[in-house]
Length: 428
RNA sequence: GAGGGUAUAGCUCAGGUGGUUAGAGCGCGAGAUUGUGGCUCUCGAGGCCGUGGGUUCGAGUCCCAUUAUCCUCCCCA
Image 1: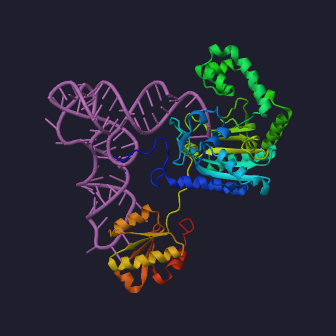
Image 2: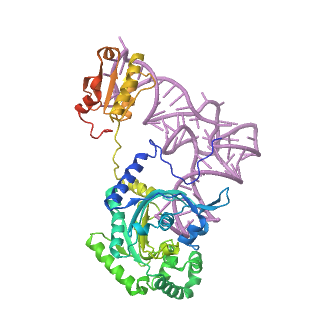
Image 3: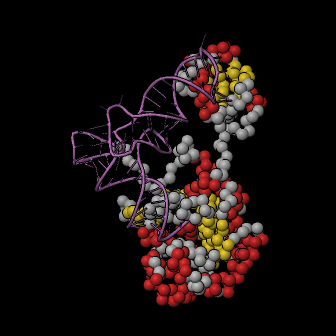
């Protein structure tokens, strides 16, 4: 029996999942990154297990129970990356990028892996497009990073979304807040959900993220994170809000916005959509000012985000946003007979050399079947080649939209096709 | 890790209380049209009904197990 594909991993087949959507979406992201002057970094999909423990945090669920860990034949402990930041920063520190580029702006697109139960919009292998901006600590770059994320969704055509914004402050102010929060929650614990009692122990901030109605009631009067911010973080947040407003980016302050990684400081944000089932987060990110240093680099501020590609595709689907059709080929060759077939083999090669996307029938089917095939490939022209055409050194170029047929000489096939026009939206 | 739904053709799905050759639409292939697509009509191919066991004269249908998948919690993209 054929083994089943690994659970929870997405795959794209051209006719079913429509890999053209992936190309389109990734293309938009790459264009945006170029526009905002970010360069692509490609890092391995696996890294030393220790890297993720140090970067993401031992106490996070991701590290404690969701990583794909394995030992190599050589005895190294490696982990399939559960997120993109750690690997990018590892490369940044290792190659001492801060020397050549005091401000380093990177982007990546690739798969991440988390061993968890699948659900709508949640996969064991999922793709993220992300950026990391290193070496700049001000709210101006925060605004830029958020602006890219929002521009991405705008360009895709996703309009039903909410930008949530919060600040976690510095490690110190955050610690003071957690203390206050735990003090507040402690007497209420008996009434709280099991989940929140566990969070109280392991990661008290996450109590705020609860979905239990009773917990929400109990936490209604809990101290707010923003009230515990240190003055600089407070000013940073104020300025960022000012910038966002100036850029016309709508946001909602959410003092309960808590994100999953331990490394976040100050700015955190999340972009939410109602169109992805129970997963509301299309993407999110934040500032991680201590992380580079923690990984052995110089003290370096940084901010980044990760956007879920599958989730964006789901949101497009459920919102019914039209996705542009991929271009079809320019010409589909229809040989009638063996002599024609031989001629078409050469013709095909000529067309492709001239940068015109082309294909032909390889099965010797009837004219009708070949035209249907041309139709299916969304060919702009069907080039019909039979004995009489061979004799005269021509082909019949049938415009698949107008059904107009033009006889053109094979000697100038590429120029003639271009001369007929209508190629702009076809495959070149 | 916890809970629930589903599993029948390539795809989306029908198959009251078990009964003999398991169906539809779409898609695919051929023909109607000797070298002309999209519409129409006709015909056809394609299923050990997820897997293993059980009950029964008889199981796609009932029972148990198992696997996969979808959904919800946890958590996150």
